[in-house]
Length: 231
Image (cartoon, rainbow, N blue to C red; front, top):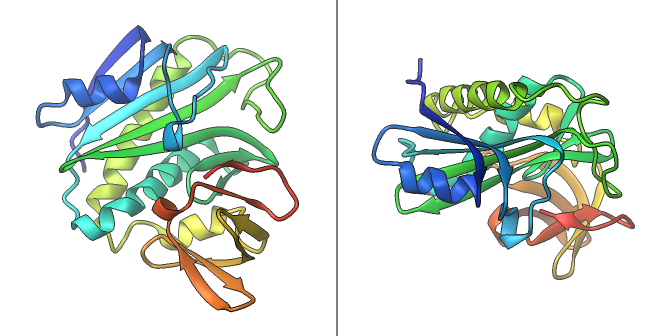
């Protein structure tokens, strides 16, 4: 069993990602916050705070080959889906979906050998913007985000401890709402998502043949004819 991380909860912080990186000194560190003033999503996008949300970041040094580290973003999403229930789907590579609404997301950043995995989940949001939702119709209370974050971190470390060849590819594919859909991606990609590659890439059938796209090379991905969301 993976060693639980040291956990720190803050009422307000600019970014749990930055705070987790700052506090990391060897053993795994989990930082949670009631409120982020400068939270960010993938590619520097601003992360909006729901009235009640999970805002958490886990910093650690995974014992994985460098070439495999990128798939830890999918592992983090799978660990969140494990926790949040069967109604949660995974939009490749980093979104947590409830039906057609995004209720959360994963942000992965690397600093040398250190990986910082961020989790944001909307728990309660009476009036979210279009395309975004929340898990609950009523506020579940102030203690729930911290408990969920601690369980997510433990699940992520446990999955990571299994190694890069047992990261949960089949489980991820079973939850992946992107598979079977026609998608487009920047700058001019178009095709139908078919499978998850062993290394975590998305296998897409295009007019020119089958390709594997990597999350690091994609700025946005969306269903063909639908709204673009950060990838």
